[in-house]
Image (tube, rainbow, N blue to C red; front, top):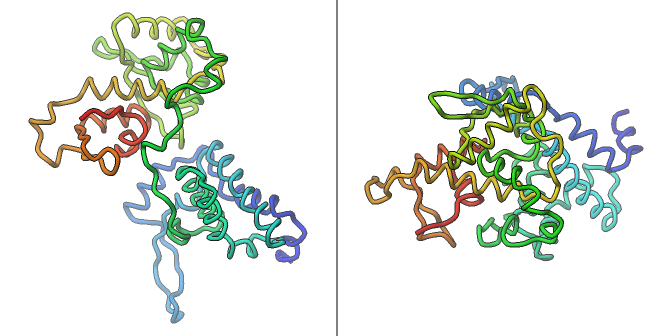
Length: 314
């Protein structure tokens, strides 16, 4: 019965149903990960000889924790389904699976960016409940190939920095994502020992709450604080321009936090130093300062800010 129903549904509907079943909006990815690391999710399964064994499963591989990730995965999976339908007349996801590597190779041959291809691999791995390593090897991401927030863009012509000076200052002092900005309320301001912080909870990626310090000159910080206090329990930003380079401002904030906590590299032992690779081979960073900057941005891995946010200095 289920097989007949799958045949009647369009490929796009099958994809949507598959990803819908993985939605875990409001659940904590961090909690699931910690549970897996602590004692795993025990399941009784059978090995190839039919013997019962206890298996430990990483729950995060089966779940999608944010709407933005869901929409991105859905888009890339739909592109894959369209390719399989047009080139191999596939009608079910099972039929499409054998052409996944072929599709990825096409993306490589079409010179799609490494980031786009990696995202496609992640989407397909989620769709078919497997690992990214189950597909063909794809190009590695390189910092020099990143186009996002590098130089001018067409949308910049439609965005006045003068008219949006307050928003720009706010973003550079806080490093918030677009969704976090749109959900931020005046009551999320925290003052401690003469310093100011923001409690980020609504709109946070993956549902991960954090407390981030407001960083800038005394005048810049005061402007942010005044905006927060004036908003009271209301949203601080009722509308955030789609032309604002939010990712670029997050980079500015990341560098501010890093510089604030950076130690002299020459005084550190090798274990305290992050050594960049490939096109940034000569660049070194203070791991402790990187971790602080990473957590303020809402990330857990320092390699993310090394490749996407920090501005290289030798």
